[in-house]
Amino acid sequence: MDDSLNKIAWPVATERLSLRRLESNDLEATWRYRQLPEVTRWITSAPGSLDEYRKYFLEEGRIARDVAVEVEAVGGKVLIGTVMLKVQDGWGQSEIAEKARQAEAEIGWSFDPAYGGKGYATEAVRTVLELSFGALGLRRVTAECFAANEPSWRLMERLGMRRESYARQSGLHRSGEWMDGMTYALLAEEWGELVTA
Ligand SMILES: CC(C)(COP(=O)(O)OP(=O)(O)OC[C@H]1O[C@@H](n2cnc3c(N)ncnc32)[C@H](O)[C@@H]1OP(=O)(O)O)[C@@H](O)C(=O)NCCC(=O)NCCS
Image 1: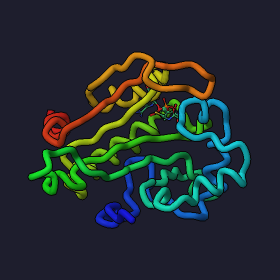
Image 2 (image 1 turned 90 degrees about the horizontal axis):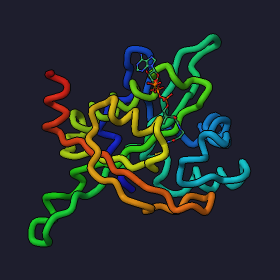
Image 3 (image 1 turned 30 degrees about the vertical axis):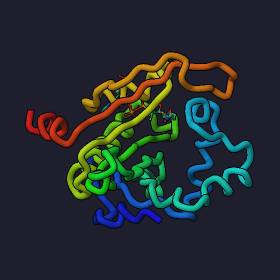
Image 4 (image 1 turned 60 degrees about the horizontal axis):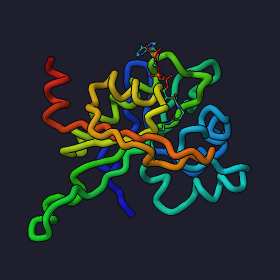
């Protein structure tokens, strides 16, 4: 199992949030918002019951690549979202492919809409980019979304991610519609320019 996220000193505090590794006992806290139609509309899997969600959530390796995002509230910390940080191999020609191993990451997110519109998701994903290029030393980070998922691509553009592809009708939505998809990316050197600008 990939243990890349062990290289980070958790928990990581941001201005308003605390980021930590996701744990198996976060099942119910994530189910609380992951079952909402406005969240499942855009994400890959939409388990229909807590039992189905448990199977999905506990699939080998899934928890290991996710970061839990918490905010301080009356009565203690509340889990408001998760950010996937999946470290993976870059592509390389076979003689040199070894050097591309674990060189990049795919990121993704889902947040509780009750805490939307406050910049929490932006703050959390910004920190995940910082960790990707900092502690993890990655060279490239990518993320994908349906083109119609405007909040998601606005978040990426707010953080300086670059639209790298726009594919027509590339993804089958569970509504039955083939929808356009987009890929965004950021290189370590681009991130360096953004943070020093
Ligand atoms: C994608 C998603 C995380 C975006 O949520 P969000 O609420 O738009 O994101 P944020 O919490 O960062 O809030 C950003 C908004 O808050 C505003 N905001 C307020 N205070 C802010 C602050 N301090 N910093 C940044 N933005 C702030 C921004 O202007 C922005 O509003 P705008 O979009 O009208 O310009 C959320 O819609 C979601 O979880 N969707 C369901 C799952 C999903 O689609 N996952 C992705 C699949 S590809």
